[in-house]
Amino acid sequence: MFKQKIAFASIALALGCGLTVPAARAADKPLTSIGITVGSLGNPYFVTIAKGAEAKAKQINPNVKVTTVSADYDMNKQFTQIDNFISAHVDMILLNAADPKAIEPAVRKARAAGIVVVAVDVAAAGTDATVQTNNVQAGELSCEYIAKKLNGHGNVIIQNGPPVSAVLDRVSGCKSVFAKNPGIKILSDDQDAKGSREGGMNAMQGYLTRFPKLDAVFTINDPQAVGSDLAAKQLHRKDIVITSVDGAPDIETALKTDTLVQASASQDPWAMAQTAVGIGYGIMNGKKPANPMVLLPSTLVTRDNVSSYKGWSSSR
Image: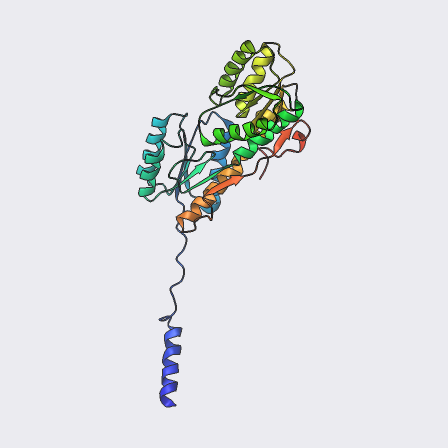
């Protein structure tokens, strides 16, 4: 009995000294710096992504260093930017790839250097995770609006854009809707309007010259929609339904005025960026998402509901 008491006392002493207690869970790895490279900082969509990412990063660490650069859709420029992030030893890169496949060597180089890479807005080969809008759904919503407006009959155009996953998915969603409406004829679906207002305007001028009867146009983003609307007004063409994807501030304004743009399937670049940083920080600390592809839902913004739409610039 005496020996047992000694044994129990020894165990109690050991526990009290912490000799047999498992080590406490190590503190999370700090987020000290983040690099962001996007298509173009001339586009308010990407400016919102940058601001949303910075806000989330500063929630994690108020002293985090955030560097945002514009690739201007230039692949070589984006490669150099990623090399610079690697040299700066950032903890995380948010990547809006200029080319989702060609960027892979740069992504793998960054990850080999211990940097977490999260794709935003468009998927990119080799990244740890991707956060983007459900672009198939966005294309469906926008083109369902057209189909209903035309009662399933009419001549339409799909104004295409840069060949990235987001654009390909939007076009796919749109085509799936038009395929269910045999009375709808697609006059063109392969012209890249460069994702810009100028590109949309130039493309639309060409369409209006080639096609005397045009009932509707689906553009892959809002800048192209605004450009298309300007072209139609300049050529005095009316009764054309224009829809798009983004839910941008320009479209909020347009939907409240006299415009041919009648609907836009919304994106939430702020939420997208915040989600991407949160997921990236989790991966940094060994918490991989159950699904590396995160799709955020889209909603259709029209003249009827724009007054209640909480857009990109709404308070969070």
